[in-house]
Image 1 (cartoon, rainbow, N blue to C red):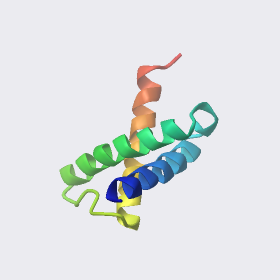
Image 2: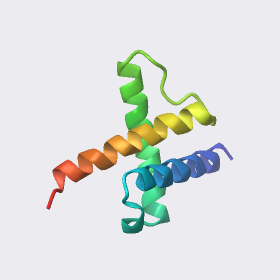
Image 3: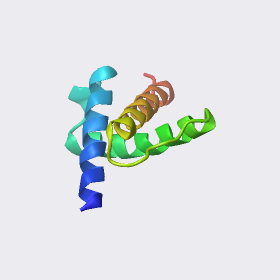
Image 4: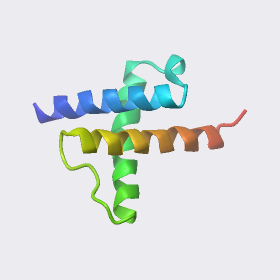
Length: 83
């Protein structure tokens, strides 16, 4: 059950990040899920480097960490794959 909750959190975080970065039309549900899950890892790493805790569970703070990480991931992707 925890895995399903993390997939849902990843999907929501990836979807919100894609709306913030205006890439929502370019990716589907699977892209949002992957973006949110990878974003949670990136956000956790960044927050730990800044002295704060990373994703702490299935809560609003972890969603915020995942969204920030996903936004960072989209930004890096834009820099790498700039046309």
